[in-house]
Length: 485
Image (cartoon, rainbow, N blue to C red; front, side):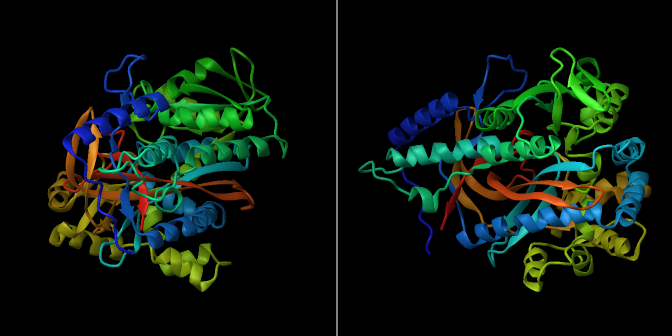
């Protein structure tokens, strides 16, 4: 099927569109706080004026494979603990201040709660020549923009439905449901949290307990989180409380291994991390923040994620999972077709450690850097090193530290000339897009039993094609929505 071109509007029509888009966004919470904000200030989030084309077949492949990826990572955590622990021990030597400290929390914890809740997101780019989806990373902690993704889909449907994309007659430019569907991620992620609450109460849908959101200080992306929180209360009657890691010790108490909010004595059923994924989340007061992480891990509250589940999302694990023999081991009940569907999403990934494969990776990093991106084990935008910058970056590090990175083949996505609005300024640039598919799961870390395994909507983020990084909250990209063709 041919792609519809982006709507072409006159100067006055686009000006009116931007006004209506901005006011809809402010009225419906498609917003973020600006840097150095006051609590009453909010800006329209960086977004696209129009939805961006994504091949329908590619989109459905990404959605279809999500539950297999959920299962794969559960099995990595539960099926061969010795293998997984040895990887984490090795990574801890290369990255002692973060991966090492997380692993230390796991080792010190009592592991009293075997159930774990995963709110995951698998991120892809579409390879231009083949329309194949290629995985960038699998995120196991603090997956963001599920709330705003639902909102931008609603915005684009509103603009389309009211004829604002049609330059002549105010007709719909796109078919709403078939071409520009709305992600249900805000509700679906809330359902995942409700599932955690349900299993905390031994299979009863109780609303007497609360979900504890662990957030960053001065969180600019709090509205994205709040949409999930509001859906959790509206659709399930479950309340939420928000603390930073620094505030945990002062505001919670533990009685008979159960976690409570001191001020109300509400019992906490689920601890949901929207923080704790990067060293900077602990650096403000390391003694207090790392103690808080251990305190929470040591309770009966179900963690989203547990430390072990978070560590399964390291890039080293992603690199090892590109091998067919490893995938076959952890998805032993899957058909050959299902295994191939997972394997087809991978690009080449190399370690930089002292192994034979690491030697290959080191050689490629210096001889063909333009084909690769260098990624550390940690999450969050702005940490990657691209192409020609790789050799000089590695030369500045002690070789002992190279093992904390993986070398990943770059994906060649198509470009589209969409329009992005940021701080009321419209940019008309070539953009590239990254499709994220959400999934939720409740599982038993000790037995490997999977209690729930669900899809949970999607996210499209776009960035200027000349920008390497794509983190919206980090200031590199924008929230977008799909136009399926």
